[in-house]
Image 1 (cartoon, helix red, strand yellow):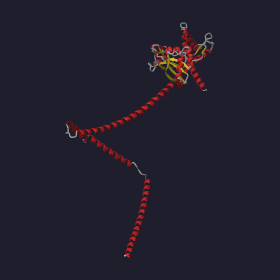
Image 2 (cartoon, rainbow, N blue to C red):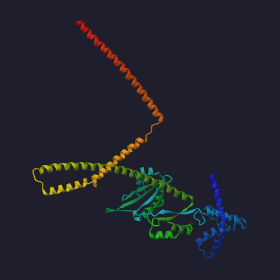
Image 3 (cartoon, rainbow, N blue to C red):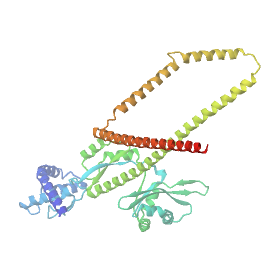
Image 4 (cartoon, helix red, strand yellow):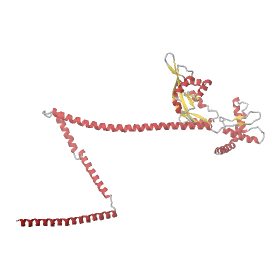
Length: 436
């Protein structure tokens, strides 16, 4: 129901366009009829088309105007037959007719391969994974199709996925001569061979649906292609497409006729976008891995630098001890005296108030002050809640009372112990007196 609704809306739109362009079509038909005597035979199709669109004489009444509008609608749509005269066959409206509205111009890359490279693209009705898994079998089958000549070798240049579970396989054939040299079979020669009827049937059994050469256009071919607009494309639109070409050195305008062609290019675009995204993901993973390796390498370099510095210090200490032992018992030489003077100068510069040591001391004092202020601010930022402080005081008071009670008990016990000791001491003296 949605498709029928869209079709009705499109028909209404085209019908409105028919009414607006009816006068211009009549003028076109009049001009064509005025030049009918001088027009060549190849323009009869255009004249008949103009007659079917503007002035059909099939019924010779007011119904011819309705028929003209219907023919215009069919021409705009690009399908159907246009009846306009009882004695002349009807006009077949195709999407290539100049009045078809479902046309646009896109851009395709110019192939960069030469004819000597021998590249021919084969479209297979198989998935990419199946083609890659059976690539060797495909090469052997293609070699048999080419006659099984032992001097010929079939090679696969590349495999690429296409929309609708199809795959493109680019091949080239190498021919070895008896003297040991080898060369590629030209792409046009290989293409003409695979386009033969019997060879094409064998390729169809292998799943090949289409074959095309991958050769670049010569300057003459490119000029001829650009100067002559394709069938059914308005020359003004073609000229505008050439002007709007974003990269004339790499892209050429190509017509897109009908929804199927537009859908095909859309699917190819989506497929290429997926491939680009896959490639970007691979590059992203490689970059991440390289970044990890770089971080590891930087860490190792820093470690080796520290190790080198430690070893340099150890070597310097060994050299100092060796030099001291070697110069033991000798007087100070002139160069040593110069070194001592230079070292004293360096030491005095370091110890100067405005030089490195003074600056270092100043920085150290500032750091200590910053730490002190930071500690003070850190202490001031903590605030104890009033209720919590009351509970703490109450708890400490109870602890203090418990300690006071414990101290009083201990004091009482100590006094009792002293009384016991005094009693024991008195009883000992009494016994001693009795014995004496």
